[in-house]
Amino acid sequence: MEAQSLTHPSDDEVNALVYTRASMDRHYLMRSTDDQETDCRLWCDQQDWGVGKVITDANRSASRWRTREREGFEEALRLIASRQYKGFVTWEPSRAGREMLAYVQLRAACQEAGVLYLTKGRVYDFARYDDSFMMGLEFLTAEKDAAVIRERQLRTVRLNAQKGRPHGRLPYGYRRIYDEETRALVRQEIDPEKAAIIRSAVDEILDGVAINKIVTRLNREGVPTPMKPTSEHSRGWMTSTVRQIIKSPTIAGLRKYQGQIIGEADWPAIIPRQKWEQVNQVLADRARHTRYVEENNHSHPKWLLSFVARCGYCAHPLVRLRGMVPRKRDGRPRDNYVCGKPGCRKVSIDIPYTDAYVTGVLLGWLSTPESLAVIAGPEDNWNERVREAEEHVAMLRKRLDEAANEYAEGRISVSMLTGIEQRLTPEIERAAKAAVPPVADRQLLSLMQESDLEAAWERLELVEKRRLLKMLFDIRVEKARKMGGLFDPDRVKITPRFSVPETYQWTRPESS
Image 1 (cartoon, rainbow, N blue to C red):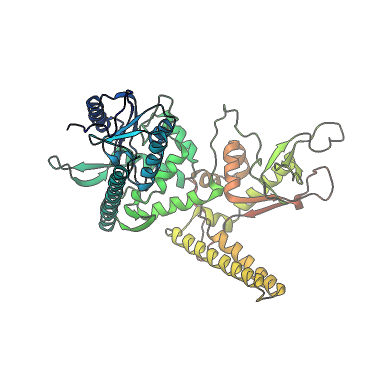
Image 2 (image 1 turned 90 degrees about the vertical axis):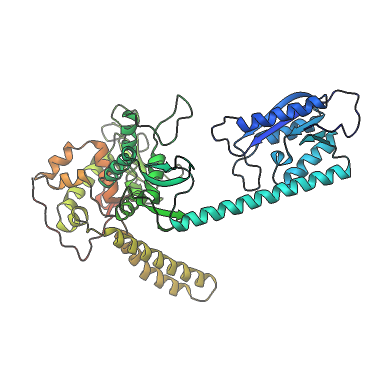
């Protein structure tokens, strides 16, 4: 294709700025953009223009639905405005943009700086109304094409979702089989090696293993991450990666569309649906978010209740601090748990006595059949019971919110609102306990079967003791009546997080 002559003559050599763009270039191979640059340079030679700079946006959409900004195009607009170049070149107008906003920005920048636009082998001058009009039609057509492409893609996604067929990026744990001739997708099947990693992680989480302990093991074993590392210093597996994989309904053989599960997929499940629901209910329980730290790590915990017990005044975690309270009578400093929130610090209590008291309560609680029942023997369909309890909590809280709104609008009195709160609050607390997923924890089950609970507790690592306490109890320390942070058992409020199912009958398991 031969380029037409300049719209208006110029005695000066035109220094051109070339811009190339490709929507689909995830591997940054630059094949499409290289071809664009070849044609653009040819047209510049035909016009006796010199190419001063080439800017490329790889893997960048130019429609209004794009999810990533076009840094190259923004740079091109700045360079045009700087008047360093007298010509701007793209392979076709749609490379510069597929929305009218891009055209308005480009036209304004070129008109202000007196820059000519070379595209599809022809030179346009935005100072001329006919050229400006023609380019406006080109960009309007490109915008329409983008809308048609998007509608076609959405229709394909919707049809695939209704049929339960896979779409988008290959999910971890699976592999795809394509027709050798047509390259059409035949099926999505389980990848045995990756699926084994998922199954192992799910079982460990249900057994009470911390996610970052699983991550540590995967990184030590050199297990490849779902995404290829972008550098030699990749962090490898992360807790967020494991959570994302396990929370995905894909591994349960379910199809999701627009954030909602719409039915079963046409690929096999790696994890049975019931088990997948259970592990996700455990992941949603914030009290089970524990951090595994090795002993040689400087952040390894040294205190039983730091960041486990909470301030009864502001609910902020207690931490171990020295120098916050008066010394002992013999002059030695006190070791106290103190509210870690600056501006509060209203709670302080002696560490050794508090640790001993909380440990005694725990061991006593574990010795009662009623408490052991919610730990040792959850029924097979406990996820259904937990879901029903969650819905009941949401309904009760909605009723309480509606009562508060009625009071704010003057339809009920403050005494009526108080009565509603007094009646609903205990129900909400009971329902919230029922919504806590039961424990099927290997370490706890092993501890329960010991004949000497106290000796078995002492043999546990500090990290494990902290994990069990956080999982089983809500521990609050109230403000002391006098200064000094002395221990008083009445200040330590320990509430079990679980409620005993009414229909469950527990029997102590046989010792092996």
